Amino acid sequence: MLRTHTCGELTIQDVKKPVTLCGWVQTRRDHGGIIFIDVRDRYGITQLVFDPKHNLNAHKIAEHLGREWVLRAQGMVRPRAPGMANPKLHTGEIEIIADALEILNKAEVPPIEIEDSIIASEELRLTYRYLDLRRPVMQQRLILRHKLAMAARTFLTSQQFIEIETPLLVKPTPEGARDYLVPSRVNPGMFYALPQSPQLYKQILMISGMDRYFQLAKCLRDEDLRADRQPEFTQIDLEMSFCTPDDIYTLVEGIMHSLWKEAGHTLATPFVRISYKDSMDTYGTDKPDLRFELMITDVTEAVKHSAFSVFTNAIAKKGVVKCLRVPHGASLTRTDLEQFIALAKTHHAQGLAWAKFVNNTLESSITKYLSPEVQHALITVTNATNNDILLFIADSWKTACTALGQVRLAVAEKQKLIQPGLWKFAWITEFPLFSWNQETQTWDAEHHPFCMPRAQDVHYLDTDPGKVYATTYDLALNGTELLSGSVRITNPELQKKIFTMIGLSEEEARTKFGFLLDAYKYGGPPHAGVGIGFDRIVALLSGTTDIREVMAFPKNKKAQCPMDGSPSAPTELQLKELHIKRELMRDAKA
Image 1 (cartoon, rainbow, N blue to C red):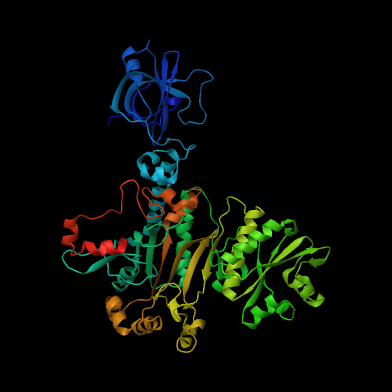
Image 2 (cartoon, rainbow, N blue to C red):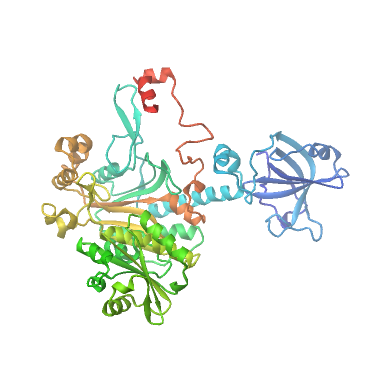
């Protein structure tokens, strides 16, 4: 090795020890002819001292050092002068008096600062990602990511799971997002897909008798991007045979306990369990933030005899009226309320009504349409007290829940109700198996088409598919979905029926999923599994919600990498080998 120690290792216990350090120049200071250099590597920072009276040759070389130059220095560890210790650094009590200095590489002035306190624009950071990753905070995040990955592997291995890699070049299958397609040179006109998840392969592994599988799987989806979404991401993918949902809950809670412990936190288990319907009714979302006590109430019965047409018209159309009681909400301004109304409308609600409860009376422009009996019923069902405000949305059930759920989050932020440092997990269970697609007038799979319907609901498949619930489950944390999973369909005839119900013909099902259906003919065990959003977990434990901050080389919002210039145009030779004509590419750009 070129060095004897790292730059974050030496302490007062190492005084009078000869050492050799390597690293990058963080700062250079010249104090009356004595030069101080802070040298940095991913382990920390150590101060080097170049004194011409001690070693003139090393001092002369140090005079020319610039930021981010790479150096190798030899010297003796000594205590810092009295009053000069830096308690913020592990190495803050010592310095190295240099005997020799070697420049390993020079550097131009960096276009971004290698400082945690100075953050460049996103485009600059991604263009010069190799410089951005030198910042201590970025290195700490990647180190945490490594530790969490190892913790997950260690825990799952202790539970008799084995890590098995599944292919990256797979058959295109409908899984809810666009596929990335890869043309095959040796099979002209044919394409592979990059896997949106290892879903079918892990089911095949259960049929193969592997019993307990996992991998830290790369998943690729051609979707519009946001802070918690990238074209390629990592999930802790696992599948287990001969198990129930309770077994999955216990296993996943063990994984989470191990990950949070690795990051220095303690979790209380088991996590609470909430049905999908209760979660939507109470919190307006299937990934509720439980860090604050704001509950949505159904007031349909209380207002169904009111004279307020907004309420009665929604009820007449088989809709609902939902109410959010905001404690001490009477202090909200007109501007606040207008912002909540605009937010509700962006989530497809027709509007938002409100009433303040002041001096034991509801005050609002709508109260003239609410009889004393209706007002009393509202106050009773919402448990309103003086200085509360009631926010109402009347619409279809899902729209009213969803829109008021977003208002709930905005109110919590406005009133600073969220306590930092809390980890509130919740299992969300009993999802509908299907969702109705209003545009196509067809049923879609709510999660994916391999979820087992509940046994007590199977008879509704032919008569009322909307009443069929699945043995699916999500895990939510502080308003973020961390994982989704289900018990899988293992009966090939039932699987064919589900394919038919979501609009796949027998021929299409055979073309897309024939290998899975065939495999089940030979005895597939009952099995279940999950895909855990590893990037989201690392981000949350790093104190951010942006998964790009915990990926080494993420893409920007246009799914581009400014550093390497991908995606880029292929050469004519590459296109010819792949049997692709340039004219088609021109048409796509037009």
